Image (cartoon, rainbow, N blue to C red; front, side):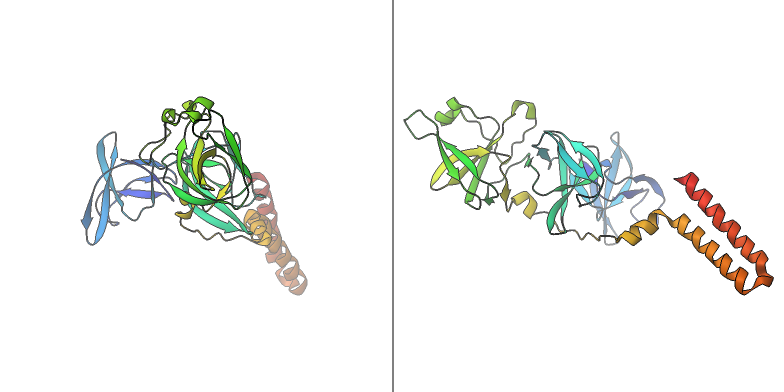
Length: 299
């Protein structure tokens, strides 16, 4: 059973932290797991590599099931380094790329999702991004935008549209990987995505639709229609995000420069107050200049 590791972990040679470490698994790394067992009130899971046992990881390690992923339903989905539009854009995901949802974060009045892509790269996306879970579970939601619901009245052979307004309540019954005029009129031709099914071949399902119940009728709307109270977002745990101040961010990026400046200032103070210790002031100046030079080469 393959899982994705969140936050990274160590593989131990035995069932205990006192045993030697076999290898380190990076954040977002994928490992193959075997059987689990208990040792001193701690549960440990076997780690396999090429079907051979290599060690154990603790059961408290945060893992993600590789079968529970979502598809990106946008042509270009920007993923940020932090849950903030002003942060750096790390990657741009394409339509039908797989992403794994980890947690949800509120920052500056906006909801964000912490995700990992299929390569185990961590980033953040806006919670209003168009994504679709590969395994569907019926749910009730509120429309986040105006849209049209397509229905086919029995026996008329025509398609009718009904305008649904923002904040209308809908019940999403299922997903339809493709929808045509003939399939809409002849409901027996519609192939649904059941709870146990998945969109393993998204190329065959270019247009994904949601079958919904609204205004006493059953109809269809595009899957990328914005809705609130999404089930797969509701189930995500909250994660606290600490926004660093501008000064903290600057000091973190300029530790050598600040240390060098402090060293030079102390040297000046020492030179004027205690001129007999000018040799120590010279040492401080030299140290400050060296730190500035080191900062220059490090950058």
